[in-house]
Image (cartoon, rainbow, N blue to C red; front, side, top):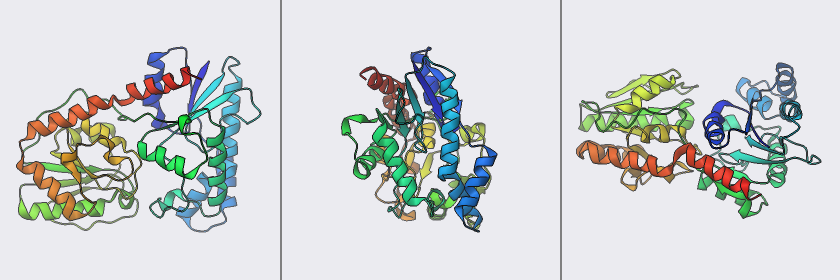
Amino acid sequence: MLACISKNDRAHQLFDAIRKLDSSILDLGIVRASRFAKIRGALAGRTLDRAQLRTEMEFSPVVANDMQRQTGRRIAAYPAITHVLQWGAMYAPVPASSRLTYSIITDGPFDPEDPAYPVEWTPKRWKAEYFSRQREIYSGARFIFTLSDWARTRLLTLHRVDPAQVVRIGWGPMFQADGPNLEAAAPPYFVSIGNQWHRKGMDIVAEAGRFVHERHPEVQTIIAGNPAGLEIPAMPGVKLIPRRQSQAEVAGLLRNARGLIVASRFDASPHIIMEALQFGTPVIAASAFGIGENIPTTTLSSECTPAALAERMEFLITEPVEPHRLQAFTMYSSSGGWARSAQTVLGSLSRE
């Protein structure tokens, strides 16, 4: 029997798609570290910096061991389980000595030497330990399912794993749209949505929006999400919504936008891309990380700079709306979303 488990809520769309294909598969839910483990992990981090303290806590072996024990208890409640599919590589869901096997779903491996890797995801005390821990987790996995080709390539570069065991499955949106919208709002607006604005490159988006507004005064750029420390000054043609957005708010912004702008300094496989494409909303982005794998070349930017993004924004403004929205929706449809991801996972596991 196959069982699914995750450390956060990002997995539920994929797990739901998997269980639609086989209702006998168990969903063991989300495992969260206990408060006691978090306190111990924070104390073990040995730092007074508040942001770094949170990072040290989240990636500490104390928290990982606590989550592994909780996972073990959930698995033990179902003796028929033979294989565990886990979203995330913080810990192995079963010990090496277990009769059970496991597979891992990941959007990319931790790379302590990559300068682009976000500071908020890089522990200092546990950096070497966490990298070694992931190597052991990946080496023990039956399969490693990556959301993007970029993640697959990075994993093969960093860790000694059999390429046949590392399978790219793609990804999908965190919510389902009620169908494409082949029109866009008038006057036109572009949107960029995400939390942690520095990592999402929202300062780059703002400059691109200001530049386009100078040449096309009717065009507005909306930036929405939790800034998490980055302050963007007020500028003409740029509207800031500095708070986390609900799914309904995200859907409302994406449905009528002329385009979504993704300017992330680091983003392995943003769900927001698939959420935009399912509405038929074109995505403007540079082909970094896994970002460019589902974007038409007509809206791929040569580089992630204000000038390059503005050039693609102006291209969409001056082009007919419907053909580009049809192209965007076609890209989403051809990707297969989570349904195809689920088929790929189960197809691989069936050959075990």
